[in-house]
Image 1: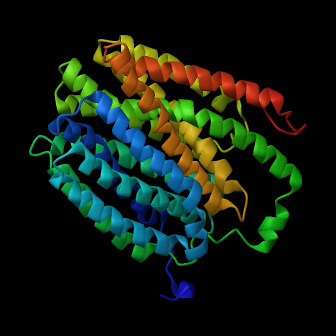
Image 2: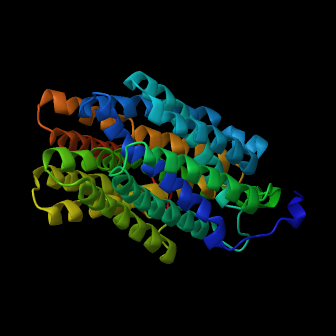
Length: 396
């Protein structure tokens, strides 16, 4: 396909890739804990499984982010999508936790490279959009898809535990077709010319380094709270609070409603970049919401705490992704680091939460452990920023 003749589709078409892939991912991810139960594993095994696969997600983000820069986002996305299809369709046939873990490892490594490439591509899908606008649309799209995927998993499981995986694989094939149609071979390389690189001054870099420091540290605690809720809350509500699977999935999907609302606000209010107080306070607020989840018995409190965690996680994610994509010439590599941090958020907090269920022998320990980690991250973030003096022009 000739890049010069490639049609530029409107955002509601091109960003459909992000929506549908998020539906596919969350449909799979939300169903896996129930697949673990079918194979005889408890919440601790769920925690260990996602710890293992997230470890490889981190490794992929740190070591493979260059692939999109070298081979282009479009080609990278197409190859990784086909590997995701094969991995997803193999999951229903697993008979042991180890088989499931093997396929999930392949899937998570591949999906990490896909998301890094998609984020790289998003900066060049539409020439008229700023990086703030394209990042906001990307984030609203993926959070909307996450909510739909979570609900889809809960509903589809009523018929059969295998159906969500087949639906996820089918949607991934659709995403591959849309990628072929809508993503230009030159996507990701717009706004990255030599002139763009030269226009990014040293003072801009100093400000960006401080913002990246705050956002990257905060991601582990704040986005980690979101990871724990999406991985553990549906099964916790079903198994220990006697909610049906659709109700448990619906309450957990409200986390994504809070997230999508926060992302949309960031796209509308465009003066937030490099204002660090939101990412500095988010870990402490997330810790409070997690404690409320552990102490709650009323569905309204579950809903409010979940929506708060979604909004806070969106704040951490949006800041970190924007800072990763801000400097021309380094977007692909930093998008990989961003995805590595997402993997770290899905690695450490769920691992601690899984261990907590054994230590305290109380399922609410999954929330208390994540809350403790969020507090520790918040303190670490404040100490790190205090040790690095802010440039005179940098907002706090």
